[in-house]
Length: 236
Image 1 (tube, helix red, strand yellow):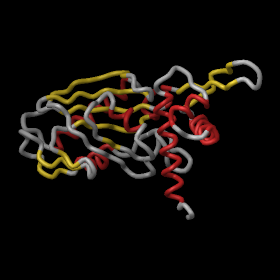
Image 2 (cartoon, rainbow, N blue to C red):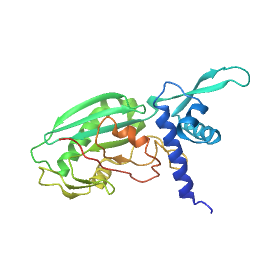
Image 3 (tube, rainbow, N blue to C red):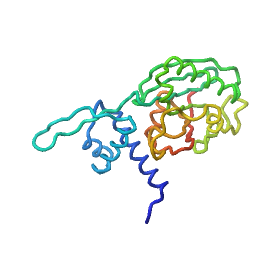
Image 4 (cartoon, rainbow, N blue to C red):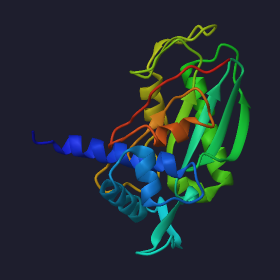
């Protein structure tokens, strides 16, 4: 059965996400350890590492000799190659953090929210907090890959819709994913060839943990060129 271009992009993005996820766990890595951890063939891992290196997400970190034969090439994840912002929404506060590709928190800010805030008021706060974080870290502005929002539920995760946020009267069937995408715009990180992978495309995601949301987004599979916004509940 012949695969479509979309299928190939999906598979490439999924494999890249697997490799990035494993690379985040270690200071350095090589082809064999990634293949063993992911179940990918060594040949597939080599192709993925080559694409990630070309995109600037991975760099060669030297060679290691383990005996006879060719030395093993060692790589490392370039943590500063991409950034993301996670936002945690409570009933009175909005907390935002800027994280690097490895998931380390670079900076954070906390902003008050009005009582019984509306979707527009929330997105005003997210946009203002995002601008403040990037103003303080301009090197991250052109490498921003996405924004994750942890929102009070219950939620429709698949469609990015807040069904009825408990204790908030303005949040019945609110399409937060689409509203956030329209308000915040596309990420600023350089597009990757083919439009797929762990750090490309237009993404505004919502998750349960502001520090881990962007990291889990990078490890969740291909993004393509469209907005991809899963939603998860946040603890008030």
